[in-house]
Image (cartoon, rainbow, N blue to C red; front, side, top):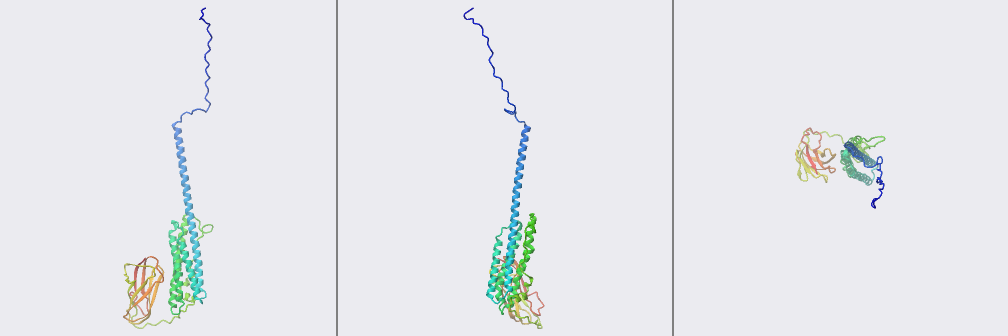
Length: 366
């Protein structure tokens, strides 16, 4: 045996590490199929749409709640202010009906009520008004404006009604101002209140028991206050007793209105004339006795139709064929806007033709 010959050793094959088994459910997932991706996208889109719908419903619900809350607040404000106005009117008429032995005290009470009316008007103009009741708001403000103006004008006119020399004219002016209160009640009860109720119903808000309460009280205690005789009785105004009717003398009677001007500018019938609304304008009325008889205590009156405003003046005597001028001041400033204004020489006993004693104008009060 050779030195280099060594006995062969038995070689063992190298040990191979056993292959680990992949745990069930672990490791990398197989790639998703296109159908699974489509399903995921559809689910995502549906979730987004549902979220948008929910947000829209929530926003709409908030808007509806805000609108309904605003309508309720508006109705409550109007009801409260009208209640305050009616209470002011109650105090006003109580003062007119009370003892008049102290004209100063009466004037103070009437002016205090007029001041409260002006304050209520200012509050009404500051109310937050939803779009659904803007028409109601315009009527409500106008009604309170008429009440405030009426109380102010009556407070100023009462001394004239208590003066023996001017009592009849003063009482007639008071009756004309009372018509403002009647008009304000019509405007409020027949227009403002139904418009508010309609808006509440349209919003699904209950009106009446268990819901919104609407104040429908009126300012004028009784239409009897439109009668000069009632006013004279309540004020104990020294109005002279009515004289028996005067029998007209033979021959033609009457007057013809020649022209009407304001501030030196002659008004033109058939076209719109513009004049300032404040201070209350004075109309210069020129007319002629075109009859055959002398007339006494001839009344000239100017009326702003639709505004409840007028004024009048008396010419003691007119002679046949002569021309006269009467200065007629309105009782208060008309609201800004265009109105029909009528200037007329009132009828006298025995007058049979009435087409020439009146002139009518369209006037834009600015």
